[in-house]
Each structure stands twice: as structure tokens, then as C-alpha cells.
Length: 102
Image 1 (cartoon, rainbow, N blue to C red):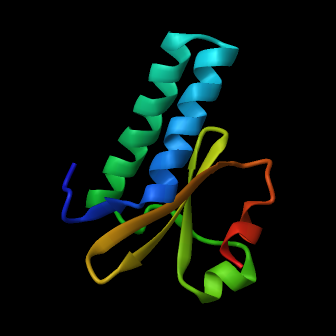
Image 2: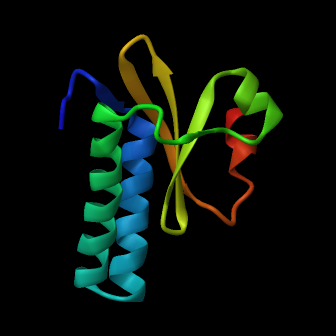
Image 3: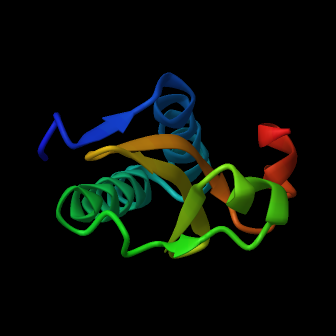
């Protein structure tokens, strides 16, 4: 991963840990490893294609420049600032996650 092009912020790293823990408990270690790999692979693609995610549909987040990348049932919320992608949160798509940014 191009570390200078993608910065996974602490809240997003914590989200990945929580998602992995959930999968570990609910399904097992193979599932935890698979979901972690899937999320990190999707994030890595952003280093080369930072606009591959769509503008966020929430008007408040959209106005602030947030984008989202769908990773299965999870949403990676990020912003492109200059040439760097900042990953803010990774959340389950069924949650009311836009409130985290207000």
C-alpha cells in the first residue's frame, strides 16, 4: 500500500479491529481474516484510484467532500485531500453512520 497516498485514521483502524473481532466470535478466525483482507484490499485500491468511491449521498457529508466505498456489507468513508486519501470510518451499511460525522 502506498502509505503516503492512503492514511487510515485511528477511528477507522479501530473499526477494522471491531469488525474482525465480531467475525472471529460470530463465525471464526477464517472469516475474521477474510473480512480484514477484503477491507484492506479495497482501501489499497484507493491509493491508485482515489475517486473510485462515489460522492456520499448524505448532503451534509457530500458538502464536506466525503466519499464512500462499498466493501460488501461495509462502507468505507473517506476524503481525498490533495493527493492523499484519508480513511475516516469503516461501518456496517445498515447503521445510521452519517451521524458519526455531525
